[in-house]
Figure 1 (cartoon, rainbow, N blue to C red):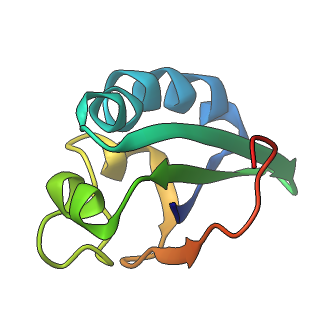
Figure 2: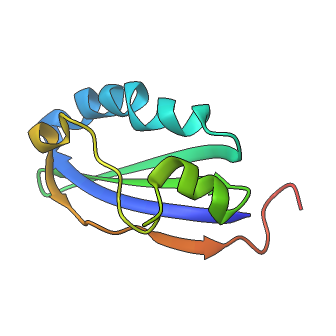
Length: 103
């Protein structure tokens, strides 16, 4: 199993609206891809900003490529992300999952 981790930052005032937007875009698309094993959405508010960290779990790099394309380390963005995100990296990180609660 592979964990794909993405981080982005919104204004504190946008945190709930952005989460609703995430559910309609990225989270919905994750769920539609065979090989996706779910996603954890974390958020942390600090100093007037809200950091989101998404940890999605995948069966393989092939499944990740079905979502992200051939350059699977490139972050995937949606049309209104510019409206919400005040910080975002162009890349994601991937980790091999060695242990989890079901193992």
